[in-house]
Length: 222
Image (cartoon, rainbow, N blue to C red; front, top):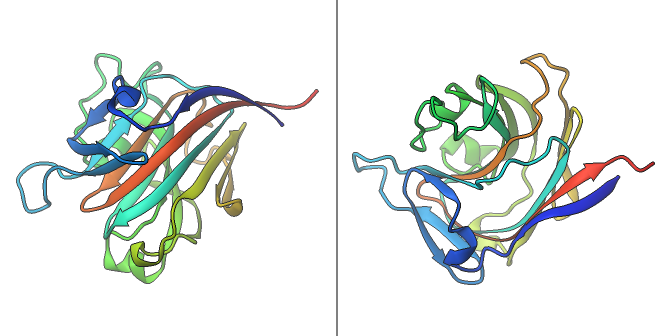
């Protein structure tokens, strides 16, 4: 497989994300990477969870890598990819229902996407049996699971290297070069998703650090 770097972002300063699109209101600071936290508590009347989108469209076959460090829990982290308007085109097109960070807007709203959730420590049942989950929307379709090797905040040591490969109908996810899950989309829940947007989601009161985001196009060797 030939990997060609098409996007690179150190996530080290505000200028690095000036064109990113926030849905909800994340609290964003920078220190050895981009630190994301919630602005509002879950006890407030405002949406505490959020999504931060890259503004670009990315190709159907791609590799996404980033460095991740959990800083405070409970909470949950997620990456959306291959996100597109259900009617065709961009998730940012006019006419797509407004999104504010509430999860149903993403899995049962106006967009299709794959959702890879990791560090799933939001609810007691998630902490009791820790998995990484891959879902496909439109719809709340759980299509693959794998054991989550990420430790709790107290035991975390520096950054962890996360990687998603999507080649045709096959999606693979690694943490520190350990294969966590692999899924072949046989179109049980609609056609294989292709090009689209990438976005980070966090559920309050999670706090985490991200850096060294890279996206590669992938092609079969000839």
